[in-house]
Length: 183
Image 1 (tube, rainbow, N blue to C red):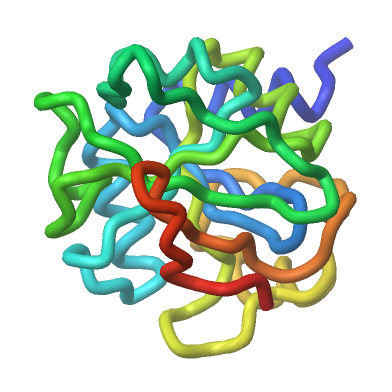
Image 2 (tube, rainbow, N blue to C red):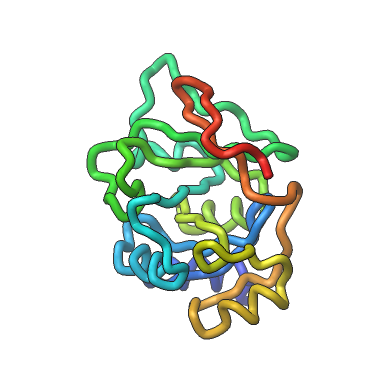
């Protein structure tokens, strides 16, 4: 029997785009090395490519090809009540479609069980950007998500967000500077 995680993983591996739950908001995602899918997400959202995207993952080890952290640096353990996205040095081959005009890349170890399961199934981080058109409200529930993205993405994962609510905080790992406070 095929599970929703199996379906999402198959679509991602095939270069597709999914809508899926994260800790606090629904996200649009693809595999970060599938650049046609990354471009498709940017087009769906009408997002400025200069802003960059987030990579969510189940484990920091899945980020090895994407980030360069000095030995003394380490991603903090994730806090389910306060999801934090960290800006860290990007590995040289990270596409500007993923990192935008930034030298770093935004990464988050997710505590959402669905996002974790998908990441583990594809053995990769997943691109994550909020499920909304740029400047518009984020899809608040499954019905809203379907209304906005049915036919624009290849699969809408049938689950809700949690354990938090709202977009993650964004901070620079090296300095702790907050770029986007928790909303």
